[in-house]
View 1: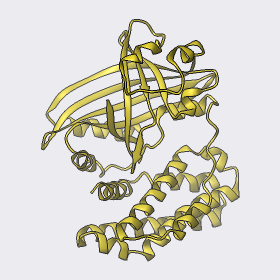
View 2: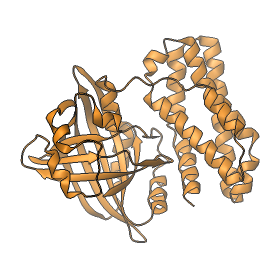
View 3: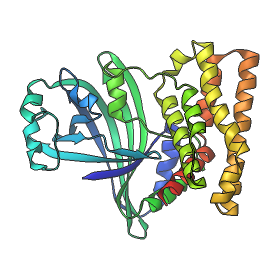
Length: 344
């Protein structure tokens, strides 16, 4: 089974507002569940290295073993195969995956089973909403609030997942855009598993992107405007994912790294404003005007952040402002509009 979902990271205030908005819809299902999850891996971290996540979930005494494979990501939209089997107890039993003939791993289930060990836990309250949006589109919305725990460390979970159960991806994205009058949401490109592996020390800490990747973008030869805009979008997604993965407390201890990170966003938006013809060629007048206005707004805000950084030399404050800027509803609106363009 392949799931198609869009995940947003957020805060309690946004979740409260979203719940109020969802109460106006006719819901097919609405319930809450307490979810305790243990992620397992081998001693040499086979699943982590394969970009997979193996977990056992306990919801109300019902145990489910799930293997999520790497899959693909398109513009923040996650599309990954997922294999689920029921268990009678909280320990994984990999041979139960034998029923999925298309699932082929580089090692036998017996070999993997021998060295499985718990790596980290995710414990959260999940609130489910199942609804129809029209055109035969059915969505499941899951609001997760809790913690990821590994060893003696923990980090919060505050996410909203929109999963397409049936219908068209574009209809799901249109639905999400109804809520973007709210500030405080960002594309969640890093999975709970990836965050957990990093917290447990299995995955290395994220390194700051360099200007070299921007230079590679500039050196590309594009055959169409659509290809160029898509490449620009993919670069911005990569930059946003880097911002999401970075330990900003560590980055704030370095003047050079703080300056470099803000500089990457400045370079991107200076280019986007200078190349506004890309959007006028590709979009209708109303859409291109909106895109150009948002790009200019973000560019101006980044210039203000840089000015504040020069004046106050406070790395923590300017990094906080950068995160707040990329969490504004109009910023996310622009990113989803670009995603919809890439799906055409």
